[in-house]
Length: 412
Image (cartoon, rainbow, N blue to C red; front, top):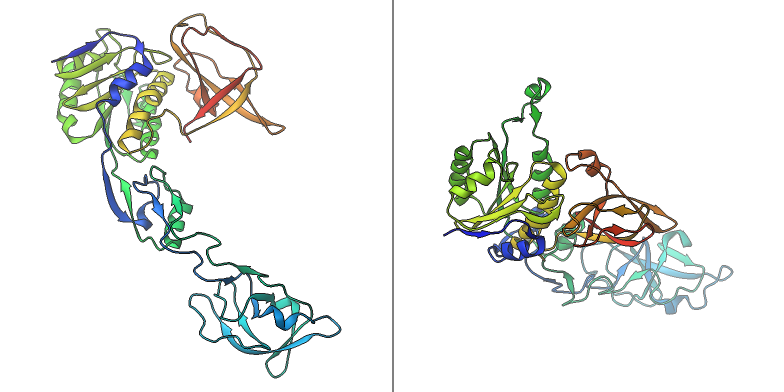
């Protein structure tokens, strides 16, 4: 039975209701080499010390510092080179007093050695000897055992999106397989008679489907599998049929366009025909007030409005945290945020009792961030193109003062 939620509910309340209907989708184990961009579904603890033994920090000669205590340029110490140590295996020869071993960067120190003298600081002489011209300190030019990572140390936390350095680090720790969150399967449907994916038709006067090129990669970057379902015209029956046939194939659906309540808003009308468990139409969010969501057959359908600022804002405040929860991450609407000084005053004459999203440009001056508001109608894509993030203005706030410190939220 349809539970109709009145229009223009607070966006936080809408999100809380939405999150009750989604859960973490679980984990799968994959090869670590294929984990780039995936969300880590387990804490990674080191199962050993890294490096496991003392290792040379440079090419040179491994020796014991006691043999060089009296060394000087006038009276260099003569040491016999008894072998060669390469990286990748524990050296077998034990260093004897009065001797040295040739050693390469990263190679493990032989037993009996406690320092390395760089090769450019010694003189080699006939017969396999080197001359050391200064005292070498114990531990000099050595990467100590466990200096990088200690056994049992937590090195990567669950919920982290794996970057190239993380994948390399996993292999450094000899973790060849890793548990990652399953990718949410997301269907993306665009609604509108005027829209086309053809550049040829766009050149002839149709409206190119730009919003897909924005929402699809934003969803994919989160770690989701996105399936583009195409464009459906402004026909509520056709939209309802497309939603009904798609809903069981995906963990979530995103729709763009047709979310308001006129006789032309096909997505809204289509959802009234379906057996939705929940239907939220209208948010106290500006831009974004005609966005919403439905839950159909236990699957969420997010209604993104057609004007680009509204499209992105509703994606950020509903779809983004919902998909993060499905991935086992904290369901928040940003990845990072910084504190910045607002360069210009911003006033709100309408929708004062709504939460407001102000997109801002960013620049750095003398080590501090300055942000400047990019204002205009919800249809202006240039506002997004010129912005580095957004600030969130609370309900019933009518003005933000010039010079005020604000939090700038970013998706990357």
